Length: 328
Length: 257
Ligand SMILES: Cc1cc2nc3c(=O)[nH]c(=O)nc-3n(C[C@H](O)[C@H](O)[C@H](O)COP(=O)(O)OP(=O)(O)OC[C@H]3O[C@@H](n4cnc5c(N)ncnc54)[C@H](O)[C@@H]3O)c2cc1C
Ligand SMILES: Cc1cc2nc3c(=O)[nH]c(=O)nc-3n(C[C@H](O)[C@H](O)[C@H](O)COP(=O)(O)OP(=O)(O)OC[C@H]3O[C@@H](n4cnc5c(N)ncnc54)[C@H](O)[C@@H]3O)c2cc1C
Image (tube, chains in turn green, purple):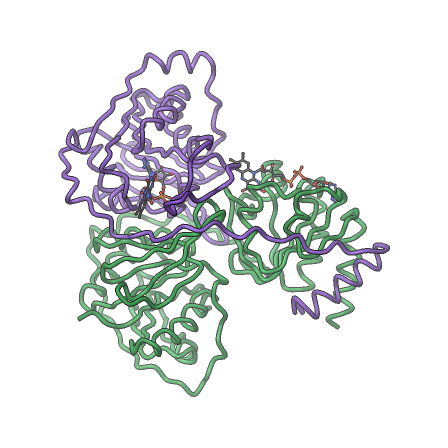
């Protein structure tokens, strides 16, 4: 009989990704309600040091799969290890953050296990027959579907910022199990040539709690310095519309929208962005939206909680200055 | 070089979404397009053919109207098209879709297979990777640059916060991300030519698949249209007054700092 809720923990340079903590926080409540145990699964090298932090979020058990070949994520090795682990332990549910890694890993693993995956979910609840039921956006967030699967394990990737992170309790201690890793040589089918992760002091767009975004109204790449200054007063990430990206002002990784990133921060500040339907698709689920636009008829005002009609070149520096004064 | 491109026909990105009386997404009056990410996939396939020779086969699973998407791909330079249309395919999920699409290449030669990184309608982004798993070949998702050598490829993929370059052996599946290339518009000449190119229509039986074995793993209950956001308030007064009020709201209501 399958049992337990598993969270696949994502971490980078010794730091656990916020979405993994969100999942632990939420799954802990669901585990308590359903009488299931909560297990955190960590793959990597030198991951022992993550144990106390994971424990503090209430995991009952932590499975550590340590191996030099797992130091960097590769589809083949990670799929191979998790496939074996899941077949042995038979968890009831396996949950991932909807991140670059999981978008690559979850479908591969699911296909090998012969199960479905609910991708990019923005809600989950306990359900009688299927154990879990998920809510996922379709048509770029214009609609939602309720989905479930009778297969075991139930698998899903959950969008970052869907659940709140609970207060950690450092007195908690999880049972720790070392997993003996065996990787089929045939599953190592990619050779990593290079990994270039921009060392940014700003959060990743999809993780960010606050995003300051610019569009065509920014007029050029040099003016994004204004947005960066504003972002840095609040620990925010910087985003952009497609027009700004296609003009080469920012890399594609900063594009928010239907063909860019989907974000759901607490606060999204749109500067010089008209609010085209494809842009809204990526940021519509932000909790609060602020629009700064000189055109009072701009579409963005139809979705903004607070709107300022004005020239961003005047408003943004003022705002930066005022916030700096306010947080002092 | 034999190149396969899987494409999906989807709702136009501008489409308004409504749910019909059966709780399904209403496609009446909707304009259909090639899934935007699949345009990058088609373009990359055609460029590889132009460089290395060979052919590009585009494959879609969908209803009769999906022929339009295939014609667009043929007009962009693909050589052959396959439409898998079967009434038994109405209730599919990514697992079923991937299994059908895999079977569609079982008898075809292939060196490189492309898909889009996700379909902008169901948006699950699973199909390409699942096909690769079925075929026991490597996959690289979110490709933004692909260099093909003899029997291998060096692929740059977008990862969270940056890029990674991987070398994989061929055949392999690559899922196309924006930035991979600039897709060409189908020319009038291309569209004329496309009319004379082969477009094969096949059913599950033609693929040797039994519909009883293609039972979806995921079940979709209800669809619901998202509640439209309400316009909030436009702040009033001079720029300084508006900014001061905004900062106050960010502090008290949003609790941003
Ligand atoms: C298939 C497809 C996919 C797409 N995907 C995306 C996507 O993922 N993301 C995306 O963003 N778009 C996407 N688009 C493009 C989208 O349709 C719009 O073209 C784009 O979002 C517009 O960007 P913008 O708001 O920056 O520019 P514009 O629409 O040109 O708006 C600029 C705004 O800036 C304001 N402005 C100008 N100067 C100032 C100033 N000094 N102060 C204040 N305000 C000023 C103007 O009033 C105007 O409202 C897609 C389009 C298609 C067809
Ligand atoms: C009960 C139920 C009923 C459904 N009914 C329908 C329906 O009537 N019509 C429908 O279209 N979907 C339907 N779906 C959803 C759909 O079958 C799958 O979700 C979908 O086929 C694959 O997921 P995706 O569209 O998110 O593709 P993704 O995995 O996001 O697509 C990635 C890429 O895979 C390729 N690809 C995906 N789908 C196809 C395809 N069909 N042909 C060729 N290439 C493809 C494309 O290159 C695409 O860019 C239904 C799902 C369920 C569970």
